[in-house]
Length: 204
Picture 1 (cartoon, rainbow, N blue to C red):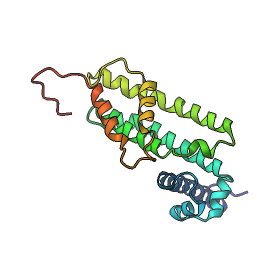
Picture 2 (cartoon, one colour):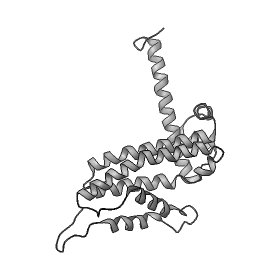
Picture 3 (spheres, rainbow, N blue to C red):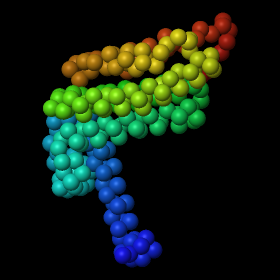
Picture 4 (spheres, helix red, strand yellow):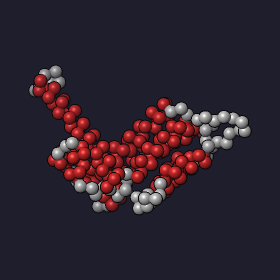
Protein backbone atom coordinates (compact mmCIF):
# COMPACT_ATOMS: atom_id res chain seq x y z
CA UNK A 1 0.00 0.00 0.00
CA UNK A 2 1.51 3.42 -0.93
CA UNK A 3 2.26 5.86 1.87
CA UNK A 4 2.17 9.65 1.83
CA UNK A 5 5.89 9.57 0.96
CA UNK A 6 5.35 7.33 -2.06
CA UNK A 7 3.94 8.35 -5.44
CA UNK A 8 0.61 6.65 -4.86
CA UNK A 9 0.25 8.31 -1.46
CA UNK A 10 0.98 11.71 -2.95
CA UNK A 11 -1.68 11.18 -5.62
CA UNK A 12 -4.21 10.19 -2.97
CA UNK A 13 -3.39 13.23 -0.87
CA UNK A 14 -3.60 15.43 -3.97
CA UNK A 15 -7.04 14.05 -4.82
CA UNK A 16 -8.26 14.76 -1.30
CA UNK A 17 -6.95 18.34 -1.51
CA UNK A 18 -8.69 18.77 -4.88
CA UNK A 19 -11.92 17.43 -3.43
CA UNK A 20 -11.75 19.90 -0.53
CA UNK A 21 -11.09 22.80 -2.93
CA UNK A 22 -14.00 21.71 -5.11
CA UNK A 23 -16.33 21.52 -2.13
CA UNK A 24 -15.34 25.01 -0.99
CA UNK A 25 -15.78 26.35 -4.52
CA UNK A 26 -19.24 24.79 -4.73
CA UNK A 27 -20.33 26.19 -1.36
CA UNK A 28 -19.05 29.66 -2.20
CA UNK A 29 -20.69 29.62 -5.62
CA UNK A 30 -23.96 28.27 -4.22
CA UNK A 31 -24.07 31.00 -1.57
CA UNK A 32 -23.59 33.67 -4.25
CA UNK A 33 -26.25 32.17 -6.50
CA UNK A 34 -28.70 31.71 -3.62
CA UNK A 35 -28.21 35.37 -2.65
CA UNK A 36 -29.26 36.59 -6.09
CA UNK A 37 -31.66 33.88 -7.27
CA UNK A 38 -32.88 32.04 -4.18
CA UNK A 39 -32.30 28.44 -3.16
CA UNK A 40 -34.32 27.11 -6.09
CA UNK A 41 -31.72 28.36 -8.59
CA UNK A 42 -30.61 25.77 -11.18
CA UNK A 43 -27.77 23.54 -10.03
CA UNK A 44 -26.16 24.03 -13.44
CA UNK A 45 -25.71 27.73 -12.68
CA UNK A 46 -23.89 26.87 -9.46
CA UNK A 47 -21.66 24.35 -11.26
CA UNK A 48 -20.67 26.92 -13.89
CA UNK A 49 -19.83 29.54 -11.28
CA UNK A 50 -17.82 27.02 -9.24
CA UNK A 51 -15.99 25.73 -12.30
CA UNK A 52 -16.97 22.11 -11.67
CA UNK A 53 -19.22 19.57 -13.33
CA UNK A 54 -22.72 18.92 -12.09
CA UNK A 55 -21.66 15.38 -11.24
CA UNK A 56 -19.21 16.81 -8.69
CA UNK A 57 -21.99 18.68 -6.93
CA UNK A 58 -24.31 15.68 -6.86
CA UNK A 59 -21.51 13.43 -5.63
CA UNK A 60 -21.04 15.59 -2.54
CA UNK A 61 -24.65 16.78 -2.18
CA UNK A 62 -27.13 14.23 -3.58
CA UNK A 63 -30.18 16.42 -2.89
CA UNK A 64 -30.85 20.15 -2.97
CA UNK A 65 -31.56 20.03 0.77
CA UNK A 66 -28.07 18.56 1.31
CA UNK A 67 -26.52 21.45 -0.64
CA UNK A 68 -28.61 24.12 1.09
CA UNK A 69 -27.75 22.71 4.50
CA UNK A 70 -24.04 22.59 3.67
CA UNK A 71 -24.05 26.17 2.36
CA UNK A 72 -25.61 27.58 5.49
CA UNK A 73 -23.43 25.53 7.81
CA UNK A 74 -20.44 26.87 5.89
CA UNK A 75 -21.69 30.45 6.24
CA UNK A 76 -22.47 30.01 9.93
CA UNK A 77 -18.90 28.83 10.51
CA UNK A 78 -17.47 31.76 8.53
CA UNK A 79 -19.54 34.22 10.55
CA UNK A 80 -18.56 32.58 13.84
CA UNK A 81 -14.85 32.53 13.00
CA UNK A 82 -14.91 36.18 11.92
CA UNK A 83 -15.89 37.46 15.37
CA UNK A 84 -12.59 36.91 17.23
CA UNK A 85 -10.61 37.97 14.16
CA UNK A 86 -12.48 41.26 13.89
CA UNK A 87 -12.16 41.90 17.61
CA UNK A 88 -8.40 41.53 17.35
CA UNK A 89 -8.00 43.69 14.25
CA UNK A 90 -10.61 46.46 14.50
CA UNK A 91 -9.87 49.94 15.82
CA UNK A 92 -12.34 49.47 18.66
CA UNK A 93 -14.71 46.82 20.02
CA UNK A 94 -17.62 48.82 18.61
CA UNK A 95 -16.05 48.76 15.14
CA UNK A 96 -15.59 45.00 15.50
CA UNK A 97 -19.25 44.63 16.49
CA UNK A 98 -20.38 46.79 13.57
CA UNK A 99 -18.31 44.83 11.05
CA UNK A 100 -19.55 41.53 12.45
CA UNK A 101 -23.15 42.70 12.26
CA UNK A 102 -22.54 43.52 8.57
CA UNK A 103 -21.45 39.90 8.02
CA UNK A 104 -24.41 38.63 10.01
CA UNK A 105 -26.82 40.69 7.91
CA UNK A 106 -25.19 39.38 4.73
CA UNK A 107 -25.77 35.87 6.01
CA UNK A 108 -29.41 36.60 6.80
CA UNK A 109 -30.25 38.08 3.42
CA UNK A 110 -28.88 34.99 1.67
CA UNK A 111 -31.10 32.78 3.85
CA UNK A 112 -34.15 33.49 1.67
CA UNK A 113 -36.04 30.28 0.92
CA UNK A 114 -34.16 28.11 3.41
CA UNK A 115 -37.27 26.96 5.28
CA UNK A 116 -39.05 26.05 2.05
CA UNK A 117 -36.04 24.13 0.77
CA UNK A 118 -35.89 22.05 3.94
CA UNK A 119 -39.61 21.76 4.67
CA UNK A 120 -39.61 18.08 3.77
CA UNK A 121 -37.13 17.42 6.57
CA UNK A 122 -38.12 19.40 9.66
CA UNK A 123 -35.52 17.63 11.80
CA UNK A 124 -32.78 18.83 9.50
CA UNK A 125 -34.05 22.42 9.71
CA UNK A 126 -34.34 22.25 13.50
CA UNK A 127 -30.78 20.96 13.77
CA UNK A 128 -29.52 23.75 11.52
CA UNK A 129 -31.28 26.40 13.61
CA UNK A 130 -29.81 24.93 16.79
CA UNK A 131 -26.34 24.99 15.22
CA UNK A 132 -26.92 28.61 14.19
CA UNK A 133 -27.65 29.65 17.78
CA UNK A 134 -24.94 27.49 19.36
CA UNK A 135 -22.24 28.96 17.13
CA UNK A 136 -23.29 32.60 16.79
CA UNK A 137 -24.76 33.55 20.16
CA UNK A 138 -21.41 33.16 22.01
CA UNK A 139 -19.65 35.21 19.34
CA UNK A 140 -22.22 37.98 19.58
CA UNK A 141 -22.00 37.89 23.38
CA UNK A 142 -18.21 38.24 23.28
CA UNK A 143 -18.42 41.25 20.96
CA UNK A 144 -21.11 42.92 23.06
CA UNK A 145 -19.18 42.32 26.29
CA UNK A 146 -16.02 43.80 24.80
CA UNK A 147 -17.90 46.89 23.59
CA UNK A 148 -19.50 47.35 27.01
CA UNK A 149 -16.19 46.93 28.84
CA UNK A 150 -14.54 49.51 26.61
CA UNK A 151 -17.33 51.99 27.26
CA UNK A 152 -18.40 52.01 23.62
CA UNK A 153 -21.99 50.90 24.24
CA UNK A 154 -24.50 50.69 27.04
CA UNK A 155 -24.88 47.50 29.03
CA UNK A 156 -28.03 45.43 29.31
CA UNK A 157 -28.59 44.24 25.73
CA UNK A 158 -28.66 40.46 25.41
CA UNK A 159 -27.03 38.82 22.36
CA UNK A 160 -30.23 36.96 21.46
CA UNK A 161 -32.18 40.23 21.54
CA UNK A 162 -29.71 41.89 19.17
CA UNK A 163 -29.62 38.96 16.74
CA UNK A 164 -33.41 38.54 16.82
CA UNK A 165 -33.92 42.27 16.32
CA UNK A 166 -31.56 42.36 13.35
CA UNK A 167 -33.32 39.33 11.90
CA UNK A 168 -36.69 41.05 12.19
CA UNK A 169 -35.33 44.16 10.46
CA UNK A 170 -34.12 42.00 7.56
CA UNK A 171 -37.59 40.54 6.95
CA UNK A 172 -39.14 41.82 3.75
CA UNK A 173 -35.91 42.92 2.13
CA UNK A 174 -36.33 40.53 -0.81
CA UNK A 175 -39.95 41.56 -1.43
CA UNK A 176 -39.38 45.33 -1.49
CA UNK A 177 -36.39 46.73 -3.42
CA UNK A 178 -36.96 50.13 -1.79
CA UNK A 179 -36.30 48.71 1.67
CA UNK A 180 -32.70 48.59 2.86
CA UNK A 181 -32.45 47.06 6.35
CA UNK A 182 -28.79 47.99 6.76
CA UNK A 183 -29.70 51.65 7.24
CA UNK A 184 -32.05 50.82 10.13
CA UNK A 185 -29.55 48.39 11.60
CA UNK A 186 -26.90 51.14 11.48
CA UNK A 187 -29.26 53.41 13.41
CA UNK A 188 -29.89 50.60 15.89
CA UNK A 189 -26.16 50.22 16.55
CA UNK A 190 -25.70 53.97 16.92
CA UNK A 191 -28.49 53.92 19.48
CA UNK A 192 -26.42 51.56 21.59
CA UNK A 193 -23.54 54.01 21.80
CA UNK A 194 -22.62 55.30 25.23
CA UNK A 195 -23.23 59.06 25.43
CA UNK A 196 -19.97 60.99 25.40
CA UNK A 197 -19.26 63.89 27.73
CA UNK A 198 -19.51 67.34 26.13
CA UNK A 199 -16.27 68.33 24.49
CA UNK A 200 -14.97 64.76 24.16
CA UNK A 201 -13.79 64.12 20.65
CA UNK A 202 -14.84 60.58 19.68
CA UNK A 203 -13.10 59.76 16.43
CA UNK A 204 -13.84 56.06 16.49
